[in-house]
Image (cartoon, rainbow, N blue to C red; front, top):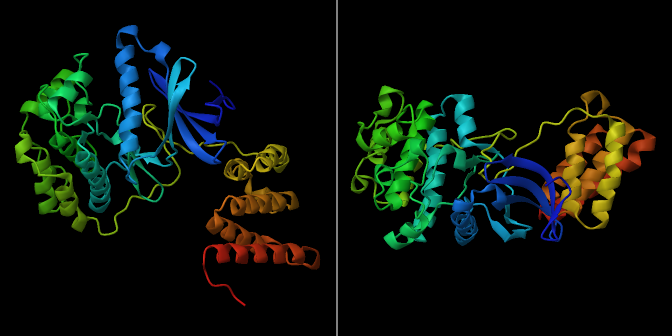
Length: 411
């Protein structure tokens, strides 16, 4: 697959996000609805023949399970289909960073930030458990934090309906599902898995956010499973003294060996976590590297470009605009403009391109960003006689945007 390929006669691939052993994830655009999407592929020919049937079932199941969860913390599913021998899922494009990357970069998160992430995950788990679904593979790589601090729970590919019969069908290959560093003792032993297993995984994640390390470490997967089942529960205040006593107690309960000793529900855990948040939403600047299995989008670091080279992009932008694909056109132009050096930022050619971008955003219905761009452009333009008409145009367009947003305008 390559950029500009079309899938399902409507999705244009733009750039690859990640690749795993069995598939790929691409950023793309829905040409019919003019919106960015992520397209996740299962490359069936790259799956061993003995595992292919189960892999296909899990992939389809991921689409169905995720689509059932109508929750802001779960990426929306738009489509499911086939492309040649491959299967694909079209989903909401989520921008931000993996929680795993944030912890690695910051070593550990603040108490408020950790509580904010964990509480948002609890909200998703409460919705999943109410729908009789257990995620079974919660880990920092499956949690995406957007630039606004919102958390998205990804990859419901191994989720199971609560009940032994359904689990037996999903585990027919004999493999233990889940990730060793975050797997609940009952899951590690092959016993029946319920909502409490997700709460245990959340406890492991919360411990890692607070301390910068998972609760247990081992040389290999088998030893890790043994640690979860038999090693004493680590006490978080021994690794970080500023963790409040009530939060430390909650964490100890989440990591209980017996599911019956853990909190009764995700909703209860969310309620306990709420007092510790106190405005501690996690802010993310830019994007981050991702697990290819996760469905995410990352900001690409682009080399600096000259204004002349960006003008060449204009033809593609105009072509997209003629097709009323305003969102895609705006993003293409914005990406090109972001790579212009500061020394060239005030040139006449660039002013025209910035005006094009503001107009595209207005046509796309993104009136807030369009308003800001028009206002900024008016400030940046030299208000000499030959430029005054352009300044007035920007002010008029900004007023139109404010009107569309239902905000008062100056007489």
